[in-house]
Image (cartoon, rainbow, N blue to C red; front, side):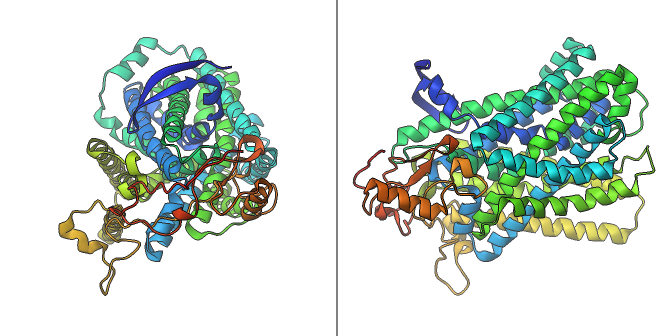
Length: 582
């Protein structure tokens, strides 16, 4: 028996819930938040961390902390959407949006995933170069990164809990490696405390602050978290069970992101202690090992490389998960996880391989670091296309029922979203100004047109997301009408399409591989074994691949569409007349 206490748990944007906290029960929910937090310590983040430390010292540690807190709020919006509706963000976008918008959002999500994958390839290749003392050149390390992806797939075949354990090991390697660096660098703790407690942004460090925001809050992570939370068995006919799940997921995510804060802090502080205020050339992942060796000795190079390799490899599988969720959600297209990784990683290989080959004879090149910076900006640009829909869906009473965001919470999320997007756009403009200095007006004209198209795209997504969620004022409700009149199922001013509930993705099968045939075959077989009728409970596969039936209480009455404001309960929780549990 684990620790059981009665407590009132209050989490940001979730509310205060009375739950009986059980340590054993909490352990069963560990995993999704752990995988989600990996995006906060991937090679792209380490690139930003070391540049912040070298160029701004300890002054931006408070930005790191508050960006992580904002990221937690956004991630819990994604988790709440998945727990309450039992469908992840990509599935909701397919069901609620028109084909044009649906395919546009899918392309944007895939671009973000590929961009993140390129950073993982770069980080792993640099780590292999350092660990092999140059025996494995960058171009060879880029190619080797493909094989490591398939090795992780072999681990996944043993069950998702085994893979989650491996991620735990990789994160532990990062913590230990960077903690050793922090200790050996003799970082002044007083300066660290001041960096966290005294908000300030020196004018020369504005660029680093913006880059830090862009590298921490990533669009593909929103898709990932909304899907991962469905891998634990829940009684979805019971509101208390949903609240309990949200509390446990919220606690697990908070602890996981706290670990990420320490990892990012360790890296930032090491480079602040060693290089801030010194006349250095551009410093990044590509030459960080060289500078660390000169400042702290050769042993520090291997410690850094080990942590960097763990960051790159841990990010690999989460990218594969996200890609599969996005593809099946938007397109209802299921392909082999091996093929999915091969396609994604092949696209990611091209720019990394080209740059590494072109600079293989130039030991002072920072081309890969420049590519990393552009990729961080790419994530910033893509963020609104995932952030706006998830916030709009959480504000819909037709979809979320009693779990929808209230006015205060909606206002808070809107402020957060607008602030993050404005910071990201300003960062893109500042970076473009620096990168394009000295070019002709014709280039700036192209940039201006591109920015205008981007802002129009964001506005289009905003209007149709809020229209689908029923959040538009009645005075502009015509935006929810299809051409030719008539209310669209996709944009019908809050007329959310209620889709029949279905079995959640098996926890041991996150990449689409079914342990016993297709998902439909598995559900049919279990229903036959249970002797259940038409209103039978749905299939849930527990951690480790154990199969069973949860008392979901969703029956045939859940089929079809429920209009907002109809006779059904606003939440759309169409429970069956009875519930059974096996």
